Length: 154
Length: 187
Image (cartoon, rainbow over all chains, first blue to last red; front, side, top):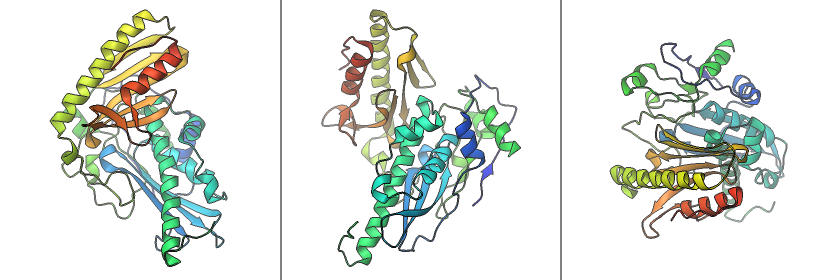
């Protein structure tokens, strides 16, 4: 995947400076798992959350093993706040290798705590939690459809 | 990589800019786009911690699974939204200001700037309440319950967080009483 970053024009008058926590910078500069899987792959679940009008859009994809229980790989793409990108990068990292039912218990508060997100950016971590749930939901729906409507036992 | 560090260091917490300044000099933070993106990129700006937005004329929702597939303009007209939301936020500002005079909280501070209400309760945490106009919502960040998004419910005559059915005023009343030890009457 690619990232495009445009530097801020120095002609803007700055107010108070704010420093991002090093975990956010780390995930922003070295995001894990950027990219995408083939959406049509039956083992792939795609979660797409947010809205351009809000300035945040996250796509999080999971690849599930043949048993249907474990996430073997993840990819994400995010557009928006640095904290949103970092949150989705963290999410993509945390869910790798975990059972799908377990990742559904990941809470936005944990992501926010890890990134030391300030109050105004807590919404970004919520979006990441939503993205995880959305990806799992999509995977389950695809599996159910493929199995002729019968829900897959997990 | 150096570009990113320089860029991040320069992102300010808050900015006051004139609209023309925004249009010509906005900062964009872009990781990467989904292939299906058809929304014009120049519509989106991210400047520091305050959510200053240049709202595109073509506000498109993104996905079939995402939460943004509602045409919000049909739910609540923008001017009505501003009227309701501004009233609510100003109402909260006044009442919480009075509340602050009565409770003894170290580091109590309430500020309303750039249409963002920031309530600091010292070591107890900080609330941020602001309008999210494209979604016709009031967004709140709470040190107790984290982020929540309230929609206007005409029947209930209240701002309600659909996920939990919590009402904005009631939630704040409960949380503030728990945090500060004194009850507050908001509704």
